[in-house]
Length: 262
Image 1 (cartoon, one colour):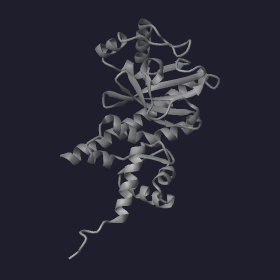
Image 2: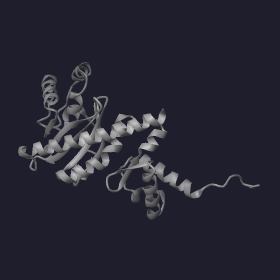
Image 3: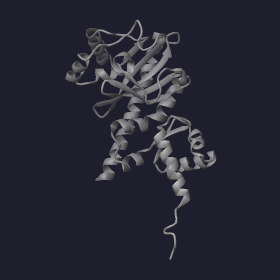
Image 4: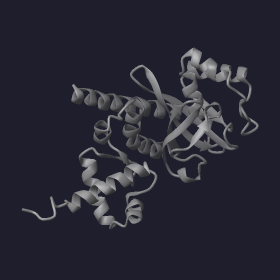
């Protein structure tokens, strides 16, 4: 008979502690940074994370960071379309950012705000946004794409909710002008932010759908000095292809979850 009860599996406890720390960090810091904050040897942390990724409890979020994986989300009952695209998108967006040579972001609409979920690419640290940050929807490419995809009644409710403060001299601040802009965005399938959020910042954004519902948007950002209208078609094509790939991966994840439940 054991006098002190069932012995703890110390290696399992340490792996679970690392899993909890990385999920709470939400992909902001590298594995090494999280390990140092937890007082865990970096080599040990990398071995733990590698096993957790292989089992689906964590998912890669860029070259050094991680977020909750599909298996963990299924266990918690938290896998919905928005979370599925966030998990599926990270490797796709890092590849796209490298190919386009710019910063690529994914955002979702939460009420009246855009929440930035993923940010990838060289120079990402210099851009004013950060993962987890929220920004008013009316002034960004991501926000305009997401607003344009709303049902008409919801879009009109948003347009009636002003005012729309100017962030720069180019920001659209009139509800009628914003309505017309959203109509153009819906018709052409992409939005452009030409210095509306910040001077000298040029962004192109496209919708990301899962099934027939737009659940997120992707954007590519450059400075206005780097942007050239001739390059817009290539950027839009890259964003559109990435959105289709991510949407397909997210549908597969949701289908797997549904099959596991039934």
